[in-house]
Image 1 (cartoon, rainbow, N blue to C red):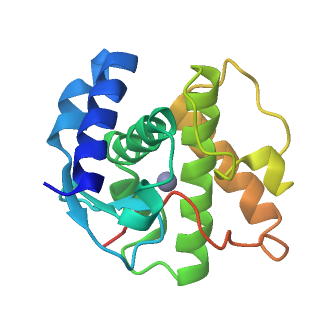
Image 2 (cartoon, rainbow, N blue to C red; image 1 turned 135 degrees about the horizontal axis):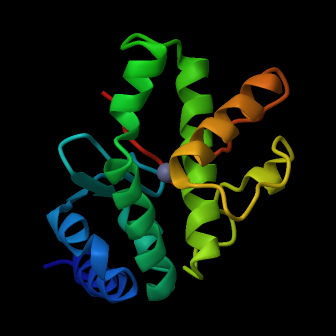
Amino acid sequence: MTAAKKKISKARLMACKKWPCATHAILTLRPVERASVGTMAVDQFWRLYYNPEFIEPLPIEELAGVILHEAMHLLGRHHRRLAAIHGKNAPLNLVQLWNIATDCAINSLLKKEGVKLPDWEVDGGRLNVCSPLSSTCQTASRLEYYMKELLKNAETVEVPAFGLGVVLF
Ligand SMILES: [Zn+2]
């Protein structure tokens, strides 16, 4: 087992302790090394892609947060919702906005729950495209909120150079 895989195993257990209700999802993820993925990403088949160069310097608590983030993409069925709302052949710019909206929705919830994420994670407030969000807003409506805000500002939204990703098929 590589050093990156060992670290992912430890971080997954930490993520399970942080969110026991997500244990099945976290342990269903199958780590797949892929250097072309800048950070981490998932696909609809529950593969967890990782770049070992991203894993190595990341504090284990933040890696656990990233794994929770990735699991939430799948638990939220973000790939299916994108296809249901915007069609299976949505244009790339719409897919990119969708990815940012899902990241904003997930990260705002994880932060509210006290989950540690890397400093550079995608954040609606920091991207300066989204208004403050009510802390009582539910996860599903958070995503719709962020997507609506991003669409309003679509021409000025800069897609982050790298971030927490979801691979869409
Ligand atoms: Zn993400």
